Amino acid sequence: MRKGRVSRTALNVAASMVTLGAKPGWHDRLPAGLPELSEALLLASGVFPFSARALELARRPWAVRLATLGERLQPGAFEGLGKRKIFMDQQVCAAIDAGATQVLVLGAGFDTLCLRLASENPAVRFLEIDHPDTARAKQRAVKQLGQPVNLTLLAVDLAQRKLSRVLADSDAWDSSAVSIVVAEGLLYYLTPEAVRQLFDEIRGSVGEGSRVAFSHLFDLRRYRMARAALALEGEPWLSASEPDELHDYVGSGWEIIAAQPAPAARELEGLAVATSCSAK
Image (cartoon, rainbow, N blue to C red; front, side):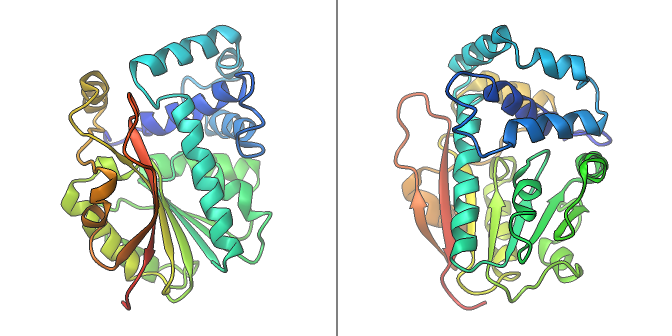
């Protein structure tokens, strides 16, 4: 991501949720309130060009048709994002039902998960971490909309500070508690070595039996146009993993307990869940 600028990927994903919520049959499939809250966050952030008029246009039928066409050129860029949001929401809720008392979203962007679920789960701590340029815009928007007392947003460049140190220094995090960590749309911006290091950092910062829900590219060589566009934006893809290679992708100390099977034609990314399987 280019220094001094809010992540365009984060903004575009949020805008896509506004448009997807307007597509027939999709509004009720998405987690309740997701399209509306995505729009509210974008508007409250004050980031150009997300004005009330622009976001109203994003809900028009022609915008839905254009986004649907775009997914034919770049699979996963529209409805695929919605499926990913549904998966992450389901995994977090399942983890909370199973006893998790903390939720951490890495590279949160303008995701609405913590903001939506924090008020519904007052006994659970919610924490978001993102690069300062993006996190500060999100912080302004959340403050304007109303920040739940159990939600903490941290503006941290994890390329400069280790995740384990950030969490150890935060009063909002208990490194012994059973937790669910979300790494949605994040890992493929890291090298394979950095992915394994991140999972090591997570394992050292959560209680035994904690989970990580994550997305991963199937094949780094596919979709050259998408890769070229992201590289120009300063957000290149750097890693990928086939489903049967996920154990090596995340490294030791984790067990893959759910994973999307081998990709069907034109699928871009997979969704998976890992649980810590050994003592820290």
